[in-house]
Length: 232
Length: 104
Image (tube, rainbow over all chains, first blue to last red):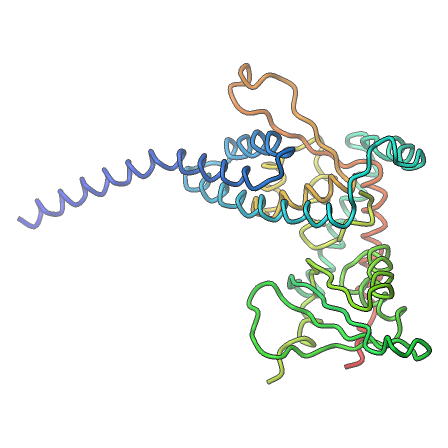
């Protein structure tokens, strides 16, 4: 009797597994369509084909479904980036852009020849820089809220208060603030946590104009995160 | 959009490393394999790199019907990307050697 039940269970199990397997491509396709719908209309055709090609190259039905779920996240993030960009930098018609920028694009937009020495050099620098970051500590993603505390005293040296709000594992409670004296030190600090010097300058300029700024998507090295943990 | 909008993170470095070390143009799936980044992280990075003109992409040659599969989008680093990446790597190396500037 026991062996009959076991055989029936095995048969049903295989049947169910086959059924699920047959449904996986359909599920992956539906998730992909959903992810593409989250993108702005002018990007949908491109990413629909590109992501379908990526799925096509991904082995295994479960792997495809996981990959498709990743596209959902990608679509959401990309859409957010594009809408933030649109609000910060309204699109200009091509004709309105200064000729200088177009020439720069023509000069620098040229693809680098394949296999050239420069590329190899940059690749080795990329590995070295990645290793340096790894050695320095893993990054924690979040946003930095920066506030110019003594903005009502224009003659005093500027005192800046910074809160780091991590995107994941955010613990409730008052976050400890970090304070920096002087805009040049703030700029140095921002480059130290991974922003380019141009980005750092940009955010300091925004802070001077608006008294407070929120810098999104900062990858703060772990040694710095401790300074922003909640008060015990 | 200019290169000033590109923020360098460890993942961005991985993607740039994969793109510059590849002997040819490579697809998103290839980059995902090389960097082991999930698709949800990879494509926003590629989009940011592309919008900053550090990277450009184009469809592979051929008709999907003849190929029997969807066309691959192939990525490569631009001259501006190579130049900016080099500056960014040097900046990161220099910045990591500096002390923290927090007062409290």
